[in-house]
Image (cartoon, rainbow, N blue to C red; front, side, top):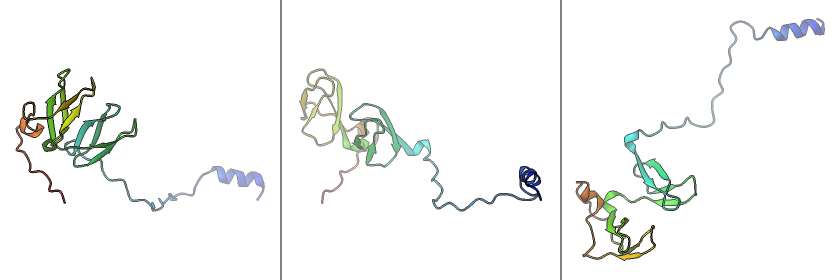
Length: 133
C-alpha cells in the first residue's frame, strides 16, 4: 500500500459501528445545586456585596474581597438605631455596643434602646441561646 492510499483510508474516519467509550471519571459528579428555598442571602461586612449561600452555613466567603463573613441566624441578631445618625443597625444579640458603619458612632446597647430580636419582629418565636461549654 502506498502512502497516498494510506492517507485516503485515514480520512474516511472510524469503521462502521465504532463509537467512543467514555472513560470513568476519577472525580464524583458534582452535587446538584441547592434549591432556592435552601439558599439564604447576606451583605458582605467589608465590601457590601450581596452574598448568596446555603442555608445553615456558619461562614460565607466573599468572592469579591475575600472576607470571611460570620453568619448570624435571625434569633441571634439584635436591632438598634444609631445614637448619632439614627440608621437602623444590626448586631450580634448580647453585644454591649455597636459601631455605625455610616458615621462610625459607637452606640451603647441598653434597655432604653434595645429592640426585640429580628426573628421576633418577623413573627417567629425566639430560640433559646446555644449553651456555652
